[in-house]
Length: 342
Image (cartoon, rainbow, N blue to C red; front, side, top):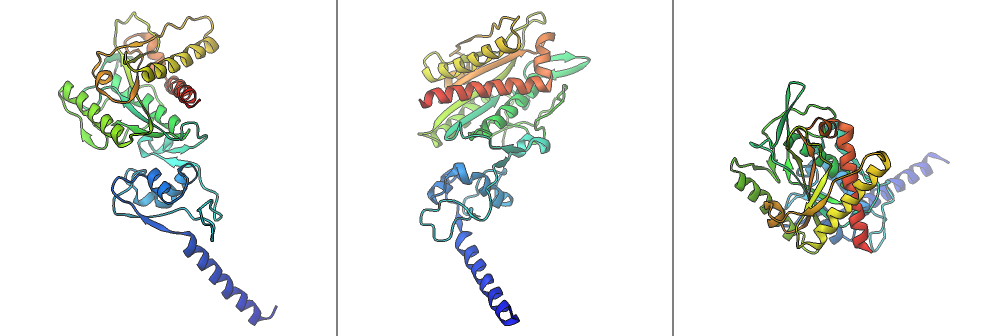
């Protein structure tokens, strides 16, 4: 090949690549009310296939790593040139990894393993927080508080749900704790309520704040499959060892179904891993509790143990046990979703 011919091919190659790039890499301006899922759908792209790639392309211009700014221009994942219905990208295999900064640096990346929860929306509320630590106890001379452990379990649960494609809202948030892999979780007071609201000192105002946020999001996501999970750690006499148990609203068939599915999962896990121990956790209606009474989504209210009991402290304090609790709750949630899809 002579130099002239080589130069011609080189120029043609540049023109082809330039044309491909300009055709494939399109941008779109986020409108009021747009989320990543709705924006992708409006552009004819499947959120299940393109969500991770969209995050990767626009990570520096997303609020809180996953939310859009109204009026901001975003890059869409590339697609085949000449494809009339924006089918698939041919430039790069799309990443199936999401990033959530609330999980902390070591746990921020979420690998999407399945689509079992695609289309489902979950609101996760951990008990207490801010000026209210909840139940407290002493462990080896250190004070431990309910809100820190409920929050850690909630973060672990959120990560599991996201790994199966769920749209997940963490209602109580701590900007710097993340998922913590140690026993003693230091007590602080810097938690806020989504998206960044200071938590009031008054108990009723705190509860109303959470109810208002959940109900506003529920109305915003009207028409979608939506569920609420509330996580607490109980406080009883030191000698009372309790199993994980669940509450729901007496008039909510879906809430009862959700609580029952998670309870069933725990029962089966205990049979498998602790066959010589009877699991005594229950699910029942507790409509008098403020969050159960006033929130709109079907919900399960979970107590994971007695913070003052030494045996229950092993379940609460050990990071691997907190992860197991989160895993089992997520399996119960998937069981509930799978049954509802039939």
